[in-house]
Image 1 (tube, rainbow, N blue to C red):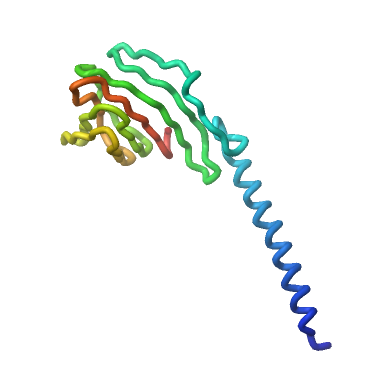
Image 2: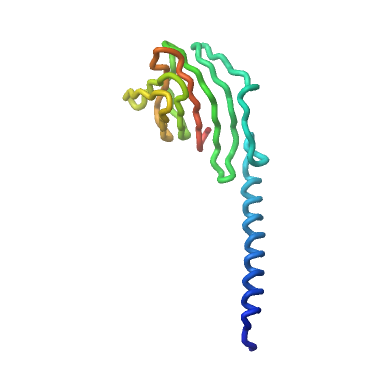
Length: 153
């Protein structure tokens, strides 16, 4: 068996780097192909200006932003909501996790029999399986963004 020269090592190393680069790009392509729903096709901006809000019987409103599957396999959905003071809100149990970003006003976050207040700029974490509700804590309408991940999101 012949000895390897410095040139052989450099050429072999360069070939491995090139092959490795192709492998990484191939893996990224496969991961991007796993995304589904509104997230299929790669990076994009979701403009909310043209999306119509749905008015709910309790006086609140909701605007769907996106719903799909991340390349890592988790389902994800997102919606913007408005809750006026005094709107009747159902306490419900979720089979996903949520992050709620309070954008304007304040929310009362009811969970497992406890009540907490979240103001504009705060983020509420709602773990999988939590029985909860959010409503405007006044004095006016609360506007918030809900990001649901996993499970039935």
